[in-house]
Image (cartoon, rainbow, N blue to C red; front, side, top):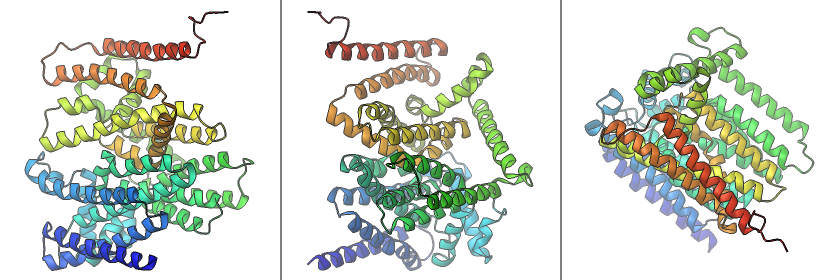
Length: 526
């Protein structure tokens, strides 16, 4: 009976894959039948793989819907944007071609050029192509075009690949979270992986991020299985690390740092086997060498690895901050007025606030961009308080788990700050760099949600109140800037008002808690 149920699931998955392929082929140029074969070659094995993963982790009904929604949302949004942007976008080359991201447009067109050129696919890893310094996604895209769509360029093929990777990531992330922290954390984490707007946007485009998010989760699952002495651990670790090395070696470096500290803090004797340490160090060296090879071009060509990495970090962050200053008159004005030592902290704070919800609402832009901006920023502002509150949950939770959770919390915020500085607080690059480690963020948010539900802790609500104060003041500020219908409060005074009212909420909340515990100043001594 069980075997019969398995075959029923597989046949249904294959049928859905064939039907979806037929529908997607209608949206693409070229012969419909060849398009149907191309999409079927991805969707049928992809859907079967999702069923295998779903069966492997326990076949939960809620998880089934998370996987299906994650897949269909990303493909649906990808198709919609491909059709809407050419007629309602800004008119740029990338949007006229149906691409949301500039990088995706140029990398994808270069992949098609490589595919039809007849040159070896390995050429993607040379320095001939400027839009993918590491070559991984370029090579995968060119491979798909050459063997699945040789007759014409079908950009939606890569979106299908990205959507399948994101859907698989939902299963893998749920499994890793459940084995480590239980279902109370795993369920909200998987829901966020499926529905987080920034992840949906990245997964509906020809970008590296949906693949990197899943590769990171594969390595975490491998680490969790390794702790349980499972034989499959090394397969998951190796697959995730190889994927990161091909797509972005820098992400592999940071992942190894996170995993090393986390595994050490979770080990009973705070000790790791020497073989594991040696393997980790070897992968770290390979990742650094690949990162150096990818970055050593232009003015950095021929430089040592240490010089390339240090100069690249400095030059790229300075350039992005310069672009931020030049693209925004009010940022340029603030930079002129503030001391030079405040500029970097300002960029960090501004980057963490991106995409800014009041700006997305007030900005008079093309309607597709307004919808995208509001959804992305609303998702971030609903999500961020859980990341802040998770620190409260960590210190109020199990003392044995506290060091490992605290390590994840610190490294998560380090990555988000690095993303803000690296991208110059840009409202597009900064959020997409940030969500590469989405698994860490959803794990913290899931832990925070589970703790708040169990303890009915009021601090999560207070953090939302503080965020509401921020949004109200900045809403007035952006409305006066874009609409000119209000008297604009000076920026410095606005920051002081936000800080004062936030302090009232925080101190007042602390005083109320102390009073409830009977240890406050109103306690009557007997």
